[in-house]
Length: 282
Image 1: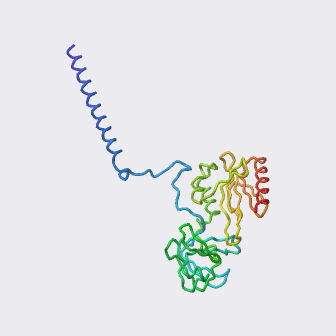
Image 2: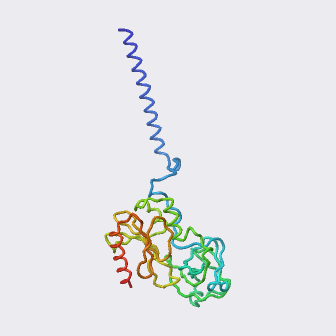
Image 3: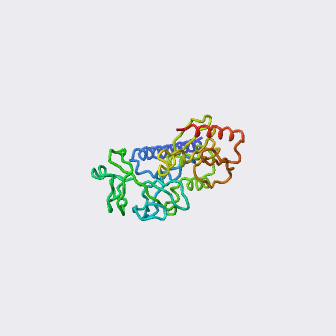
C-alpha cells in the first residue's frame, strides 16, 4: 500500500509540474499577444487568390529615361524619367501615340503652352521635361485640385516596361497562376484596377478602358469574362498571346479568346451579348 501511495504522490507531483509549465506557456503567449504588432513577423505567403498585390498599374510605365517624339520616327519633344506613367495607344509598327500628363502653373494654364525646358510634374515632383515648345491640348483639375494639362507624343513600344502592358502581364500571370477562377485572378484584377460590370448577365466582366491617345472616348481594352466565378475567356482591343484558347473575331474590332474547355453554347451566348452591347454603346 505504501508503494502505491508513493507512486500516486509521484504522479500528482508530475501533473502539478506539467500544469505549471502549461500556465507559464499560456502567460508567455498572452504577453506576446499584448506586445506591439511590430514584434511579430508577418507571414511571407498568403492563400491563392489573396496574395499581396504589388504596385498598382493603371497605364504603361517608361523603361528608364525615355525620349518622346512628336510622331513616329519624328523629332524629340519631351523626356521622361524611369517609371513615369504614360498612356500608350494601340501600337503600329513598334510605335504608339501616348498622352503625357503634367501639373501646370497658372501661367501655363492660361497660355496653354509648355515652353522649351519646362518641367513635367507629377504629384508635385519633376519627372521629366519638354524639349520643345508644346501645345497643351486639354486642361483640368486633378483629384487634388491642381491644374493639370495633357499633350500628345509618340513612344516606341520597347521603351515601355513590358510588365506594365496589361496584355503581356495577363499572359505571364496565367502561366504562373493557371487557376481560372475569380479567386485565382483576384490579385491581377486588383493590380490593374479592373472594374466590375454585370450588364451582360449572367456573365460578370472585369475591364479597363483603351487609351484616350487614339480616341478621346475610348472603349474597352481588356475584359475578363466570368461565368459563375469561372474565367471562360478574355476580350481585348489588342492582340493577346494566351495558351489553351480559341480565337474569335468580335464586332467593332475586338478580339475574343475563349478557353477550350468553355461550353460552346455558353461562349456563343456571351458573344451575342457582347456584340449587341458594343454596337449599341455611345
